[in-house]
Image 1: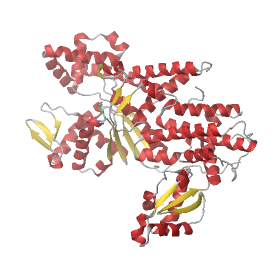
Image 2 (image 1 turned 90 degrees about the vertical axis):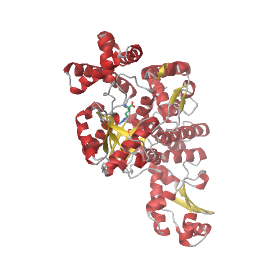
Image 3 (image 1 turned 180 degrees about the horizontal axis):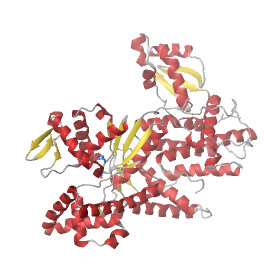
Image 4 (image 1 turned 60 degrees about the vertical axis):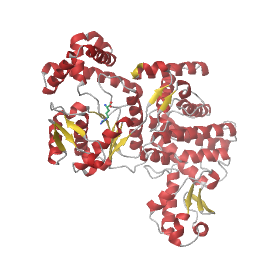
Length: 590
Ligand code: ARG
């Protein structure tokens, strides 16, 4: 019985091999382990081993040709732990894993840990704050907010999987001059019943109407300014209406987040910082950063190659950036974060450059730990969705649409499925999330329903389908594929991989790919690119499909059958945990 697996963070598939290589190589070549690690590559072809070290980086230091260095080292390095053979190939040193040892370690660990398999503990004791989603009250969830929500919550999960304490913050746009406009509009044309019925949509309509009417009736603008001033002064009536709008909108946002399986540790919108703004402005003045200009306060950033920015308007009102300054200072005081990530569209790049520069000039050394995680635009290929109100989408429409389409595909593919609704939800939601995350974050995305729901494309349904297929094989073999069934069951035959197991190339490839899970989690988190994990999952699903076509499971001889069941159970765990890190459910049937 395979019971020997590490309990926390010490066994991580090929990462362990990597560590073994690094610690063997470092003293032999006179480098630090970090240096060696930075040079290790994953070879393009599995025949070249699992890792390769380019010896030309040593030739100056050792005064020998890369080829000779590689040959010497290959002779010196003996198999140990997960490290099988080490071969010299021209200037490269290629490291090969010992497959039976890997199979025992990885499958034992996967089945032992189940839901937490692949997760590491290197972030323990450190806190990462992630500011994401942040929709604006009275303006519907924009496309940018959808991307921020999906990317941000995946980074949240990825950092959690590295053992960090993660705090997710929703910096709601719940303050600003638009509330003067809304209060004005509501007093002129508002109807309470319509507001209660669909607050986000209705407030948006009021906002649009305000702008239209103000074109011919400029007095409305004056009134809006006055109303906002009342609000800032704490006028009871204005505050009451504002709170009411805020509460109703928040309720609606929460409903959508719940539906998407997303949550936040804190809802701290812009208004949360109102009584800290004076202190922030005072600090900026003390540091000589806030210069008076025609009654307003400006931070002069020109010496740093950035446009100057307004910190306070003539009428005393603070701005978006002032609230962000207060928020950052407050967050550091409270959490002593080692990283503060802002997942916000690339159109705000300048804003964040200015924000971080001012923090640095204020003398905060942690300003360097604040990071803008920008992303490109998303465009819906189908006109109707994108043009309803300019660049506005209604998140609910997108989700309904996706789940509806997923439902019809499932109906067609698997008419006998019992719980079609759960499957349609999982597939529809997954398609939207994966359809976003699979793209390079920075690039603009063209969102096309046919491609995100294509069961054979680079999509959530493709990965989910591989997972469901494995569950079905496991069920037919009489094993329990459900999450509780992750633990090896007593009545299951004992399995210890022998030299002969996993001899087929498709089996080997599948084992190796699944063993790279932790490594991929780490890369995706460190590079802030959930797309890396998305692509990894596609590769794993693809390797599973190749395996499935080449290697029978249920009809194989008893020994191969047991080995293969163990392998696909491990793959299932990785697929499910990996999808989970992207925020996507993995149904057992679909
Ligand atoms: N509400 C803002 C917007 O919709 C995004 C806020 C992002 N977070 C921040 N701390 N600035 O543009």
